[in-house]
Length: 609
Image (tube, rainbow, N blue to C red; front, side, top):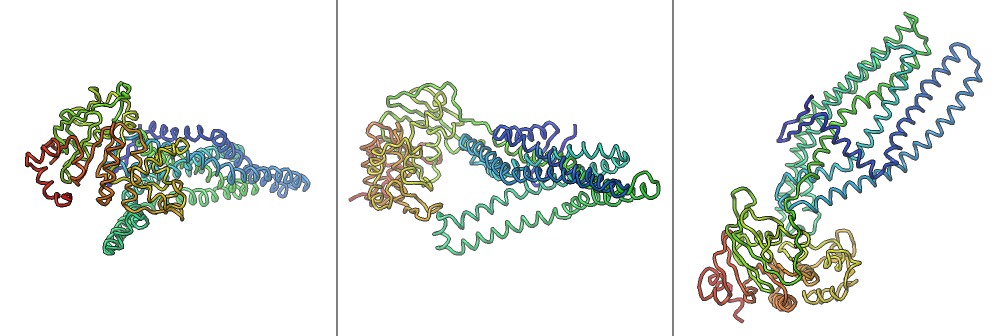
């Protein structure tokens, strides 16, 4: 079996016949499942179109010309043309319905459902996929190509229906009129096939080579229109110029790719569109027809005109068939990327699905080590115990591994070595979603969504909301004063991303709103990664007091550079270079006069009062 392979610029694609068929059938099945009536109508309309064209431009044209050439009654031609005009009107109405209503509606529906599948998969895959740049390339390509490949699938099925219908109708006509004409059509068919195959492979190669560069262009686009970057760029205009320079460099690289492949692309286009079609059918075949009529007297001059017109249309439709396989190959290459994305296996899975106890739980880490890359450990031999309702603080300088540690506790990653236990059982034995629902977390890089205040607090369906709990959460987080100034209260739209009257919160206000999510969520374990980084000291004091009051029966893990937070902790773990170097209460660690005490003394002046 012949293998199709592409290898350049780090891109390797190998596809055999089975793969190409499976990938195209994969999309066809999806299209049929979502829009079965249109999928069949798409094929039927292709057949209908070719039947009408054949009747109009072959049968009718031949009939009229022969009436003139052989002196048949004029009324026969008139009656025939009137009947045919009714068929043409019906065909035009069907075509209008197809292009302007049925196709538009079906394409939107199929694409919507297909993108839902991609987005749902993006929600399911493990967090470590997002640490891999190749994942972004494949994911962005999959989403970007979803619309186009769905459209190509409908185009392929319709073109095949049209091609085989034309082949059947016109082929039968040629066999009756002049069987030798079929030789020219077949020659044009195979020439077009091989040229199209080479051209489509080249187009795919170019698209894959451009993909990471186009992702960079997308990044530059975000930098210049998102509010997140606006202040930094205006404060540092040279940074904007540097980004523009990167934008120009990326465009130059894309242009270089186009220039590199332009000669090949031109060559294949010329061979496909002129040599394979124009020269064979418009030069050689016309010479043959004229010679057959004028010299050999094998066919009439009416037949010359009709056969040339029919051959041109048949040549075009044979082109559909000739290009179908290369077209399917190119589609398959993109669908392979989409299927690779959809086939990503989730590693964070449950094994036995034990029920999580309703009572307070103990979490224990035993000899836990973790590496993002093989043998490059960021955590080593971590041992920690979080008793029910205890308050734990994890401190250390940047890069100590604190955030990675809490991601393991939340089971966003699994340890490379050791285990994490919940009430003595590995957390792998509990349902992943149930386990995570018991945890409320605010990260230092939290996000405010382009949604209402209520939706940002809930991060869930608003029709299930408890307004009293929302108000309580907002009050506890310290956001109540800001909320009272908003025009529509909890229904106020945040950010100006989509709403002109949207409200942009300050850093401290946004952090308070994010913290309100924790107070609303009934979580057994609360994790705060730098919860007060954007708050002033007074707001920080109120946050800590609220957190202690609200979480009296909950376990809390604080990660903070402000050691004022650690004083309320039952146990403090000091981390350095991925290891726990000290642990104990605030007083105990000060008495030891180790690295925690040194850090405290550096910051102590801020807290003496």
